[in-house]
Length: 121
Image (cartoon, rainbow, N blue to C red; front, side, top):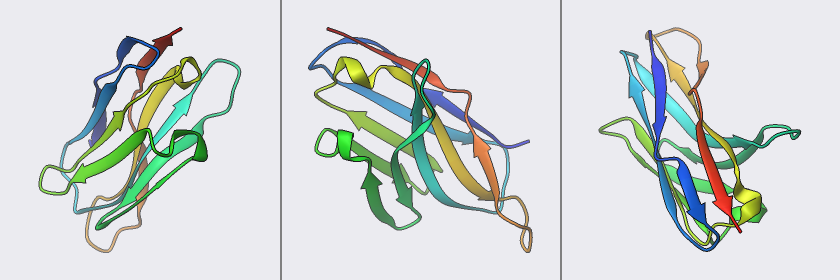
């Protein structure tokens, strides 16, 4: 069974930095877009950043210039470097990926379990 495992969350003061990582566990045939979402209490889950197989990152406006998404295709990992963090960045951050389990199969969406990021003012 393929899983996405996030790490790197924690508590940081406003203006500080955190780095999140998401690694794949299990076997699969191919991986396409990898993304980071976040969800804070009472709000819908929102897309924070995404990156395709060969790059082309995109970001939600609120994090542009502060967050950087990157991926290591050899390790099937995606990372999110978060700088100049603000209290409003506080949320559970989820990794999401589109995976092909076998050749000729359909793409499947897999989510990680989430990691808490708390930014204190």
